[in-house]
Image 1 (cartoon, rainbow, N blue to C red):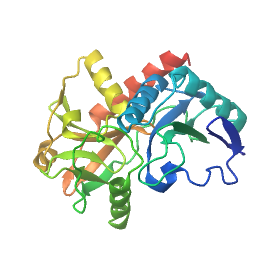
Image 2 (image 1 turned 45 degrees about the vertical axis):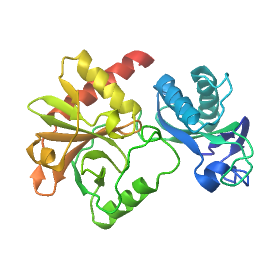
Image 3 (image 1 turned 180 degrees about the vertical axis):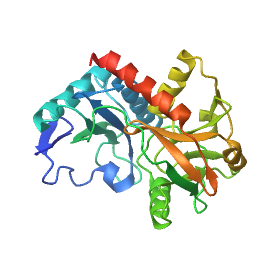
Length: 285
């Protein structure tokens, strides 16, 4: 299968170099990105993804033209999906970078965009059969700042946490702030469940403002499941009935074990059914 990318309006096959020399996203991590799930050959939740990406670019003082809309990017993604022959499940990575030029001080604050698509094994959200095994990452702490809620390209803490988890034979690690509060994992937003109530770190804590995180919050409210945004400490993990992770591509992943603590997945199973029902209705499938 030949796959294609869109580099600022020009389409290339991805079997050869497609990023130009001097790209500031490559040189300095000077940009923002989104990971978007494709179901039944269509990108989902595009409005929220584009809104967060544009907001993140604005926070980075990257100028975005008025035509950078959800409709504009959806058209570009659908073009790549069709050209790449993706008819069912897939994933898309879309980014906005500051225009080429300059060193730490840019020559311009104009923007460029880059979109790539890949097939994915299923066209629905699928709960992991085996619960994830996790622990806490100690080597890097997350520090809250005005960029914390956005998906910038400065992702080294998440890379190092993921490498460390792999070296330890674990599936993921929790990332904490300097107070010891748990914010997220190397790949996901986090939720804990106690007595049927959901808890997740608030955005003011400094976690990523995940699009799937927000959808799960909305689904919980709609289905009369109590949910609170609050600080989560390591001791809360030990008293929780369930822990699960969320992101835009994998949906909901339940955690089976944190150290010697073992968890159920009743709420995770319920929410993944609600999540699939929502998108089946939205997409008419």
